[in-house]
Length: 369
Ligand code: OSB
Ligand code: MG
Image (tube, rainbow, N blue to C red; front, side, top):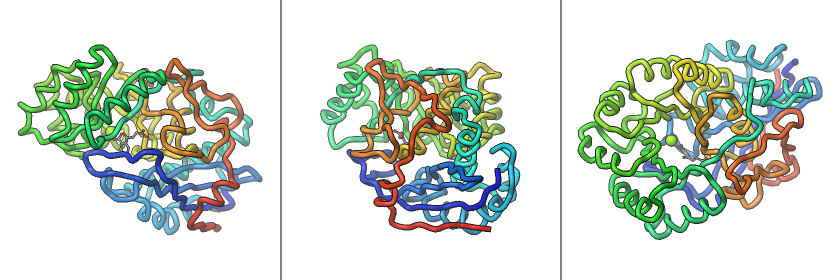
């Protein structure tokens, strides 16, 4: 596979419903789509960096310029026999994992299409059907949240995750549990608490949660291990796991009992597989996180979720929960049993709607050797 060029595109896509976390509310996504052109085959990738550097230090503009000035020049013009070979070429750049992942994952897509193989099989996946949960943001009122949860339970989703922050936590979980005593429920704090709030965090134990995701500092594992010793609810780390060494460290010191893998956060499929393997070796379950992706990133999340140790429902859900119209065909659909049936066509199995992408694009840049 010779990488002849990389195209970057900036898309603006309004969300069907705003999404609010402890760090802020999003109404529309500014999406960085990337395509790699090799041997007449096009592979697609999505950079999951946000519109701002609030979830992580990376954001849309930092990814765009890092790809343009450093990452694309490291791979364009080169030939690879597998997508994984692109990883060391980008290794001189520190961090910028979401930017790297967009390139590496697009090359994986191209490799799969060139080999006429489904991406999930190329990745080593084992599941033909993946189990889905939903992540529901902070709402304007508890009633509005309960209504949303009702809708998702009726749609068949197998795990409900709600966003929490100080002032939107215990009373919210109480309301959910009094209406649905036995649904699989978890919460995600996106680093909204501190270790000196231990007594408050202990109150979460009464709600029989599957997990509490990233309660403390985004870059911390040590204090999470101190917290995990003092609460019954399993901690799941998201922000704090940037690579396989972080995962090994977190498990060794008891910082969590579950890990959320986001392929962008860890820098691409190669590292995501390593994190998966570290967890599998220690019999720690993982699940696939989401970043409000368009269909391109969503299709990659589906492929990743087919690996064996993705044994908990992920934040991978139907296109229509996010978009009036998604940029892939068909859109991602979820069965009434709360699953996604994995497609067997080459690549992701979804066709990218280039006509629609052209209409949604605000900026486009072609990077050549
Ligand atoms: O912490 O998992 C998170 C969205 C943006 C940033 C961080 C997170 C999320 C989600 C959304 O929870 C998951 C989804 O794509 O539905
Ligand atoms: Mg999270």
